[in-house]
Amino acid sequence: MLDHLEIRTRRLDDCAAFYRQVLEPTGYRLVVDGPKKGFGSNGGRLDFWIVEGEPSVDVHYAFLAADRAAVDRAYARSGQHGGVRERAPAVLPQIHPHYYAGFAHDPDGRLIEFVSHVPV
Image (cartoon, rainbow, N blue to C red; front, side, top):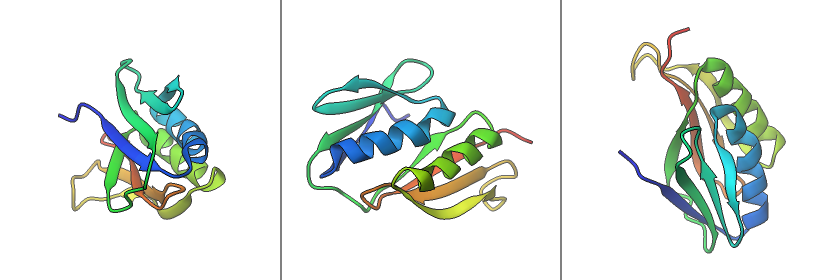
């Protein structure tokens, strides 16, 4: 189980604004707004951090969404808030029959995924 994820960016405010908007449908919200930006999930854990620094773009990470509608909303927002949409949400049966995911790049070019495992 992953405890937390931290990414570095040269554009702290841009990335924080991007993630604030696109993660809201998945239940994440900005909890710590200072020199480090901390996001927490519905359970209240701080498990996603953004800090100032040289970006790493060779990572991929997925944010769990409650259902397919939340995946769709997060994906839609990614193109409206400084990100670039990669692959529209779809079922990926090669992973499992209910794996529904959409992919986008954040303002620094990292590939992110919004995923739900809930049947329709």
